[in-house]
Length: 282
Image (cartoon, rainbow, N blue to C red; front, side, top):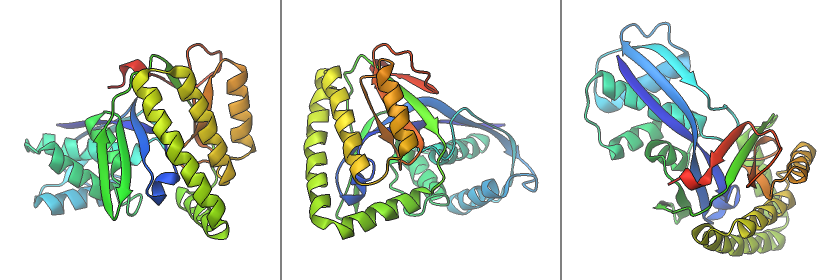
């Protein structure tokens, strides 16, 4: 029986601005997708799984078919936490395990990225990278190139994640931001410049372990996201509630208008859905 497991991710800084060539910081989270499969009849598999398997079979030039035994996950879907990337990596690992293929991490990354593009056309690859290597990264696009660098965290604090419902697709929200950038080009350039300075300060705060500065920068980042129209009343109420219960800094993570909202804290009474010990993220 073949087995594969992979984790999700959360964006600490950079959602939306990363589309315009600015850097983002992405970290792994301790939530997983696990897959057990064996050689066998694919007719009972979900259609989306068979589409993924067909790509793997073509890319690996294999004839075998695979029957899914079990898919287990504690990773929320449609919340901006990398569930499709985690599924892609886990499935690739499971097929390789069942066939005793000694695939390099580079090959697993390439195959899994192809699978993720079934869910998100022209995906950046950063979700797959974090799911595969399980480490924080600095990510940006430059002149059609994807640049992914390792980054170290030195923060002894906790990050909580609250999942809110979202009624719009990521693509629709990204398009709305693009329309904003066209309608108000000078304002948008100023917001990008502000984010660039914020990011530089965030790198310093992360490396020096300055929790209060990092929290303040998260709050500023949320103000920028609110300015480009990706917050909403539910997100704002959630952040206000977090801040009233000991959270030091909070912001959207992902596309916004729902989905994941993250909060940095040392001690808090707020009821998060997921908790991350940042000192354990390496």
